[in-house]
Image 1 (cartoon, rainbow, N blue to C red):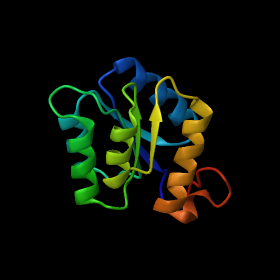
Image 2 (cartoon, rainbow, N blue to C red):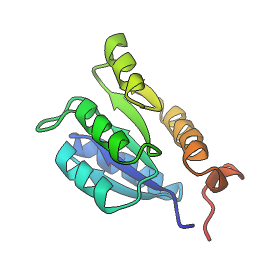
Image 3 (cartoon, rainbow, N blue to C red):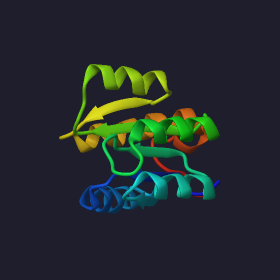
Image 4 (cartoon, helix red, strand yellow):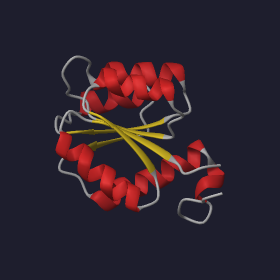
Length: 135
C-alpha cells in the first residue's frame, strides 16, 4: 500500500496550495483542482482516499461533485469545507454521504484529525499507528 491520497477541490488557489504543502509534509500524496470538473477528472483517473471539497465553485458546485464522487466510489471519504455553511446545506451534504462538514475559517488541526479519522474508515490499516504507513 502506498501513501494515502488526498484530493483538494477548491476554487481558491491559495487554499489548494496551503493545504497541499501542509498535507504533503504530513506524508500524504496530494492532488489539487481549482474547479469541479478538473477534480472529477482526477478522481476518475486516480484512487483517492480523501476529498476535501468546497461547495461554492464555478462550473460545477460541490453538492453535484459530492453526488458524483460518492456515486462512482462510495468508499471515498469526502470532507466538505466551505465558507457558506448553513444547517440546511450541512444536512444535505451529510445525507449525500459527506463524512463531515467544516466551515471556514477552520482549525487546521481539526481538519487533520478528520482526515485521519476518514482514513481509518477508508483503509483501517493505513492509520493503525496514527500516521501514514509507507510500504
